[in-house]
Length: 143
Image (cartoon, rainbow, N blue to C red; front, side, top):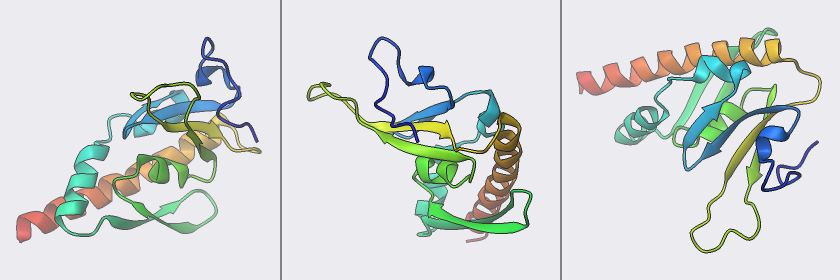
């Protein structure tokens, strides 16, 4: 497996052959294979879960081999996206950043998967997240 720090500052993690995206301070930038997750409001998702005092979320997704229950913290985009079997969310904290530096996650394709596998899985995850977000919204409206 590629370590996220196996790139130079001039290249950036985008040069990793299996690169799928970045998450930094909860903000995500996805490549084409993860495009189904673009536009999902992870911030609102986390806020609604917090208001319901249910930050630990579980959703059911079918990645093609039957229903799978995924459990994660609603405020952890890396846990949510990293729950896709075809995706590894690697912690990345580049050296020599200084006191204002930060850390995030580099998303890479797991060994044995293709872009099509990642996109199919992202579609399934997006549907489950949309459904969970709608359920949380409805629950808050009813209370």
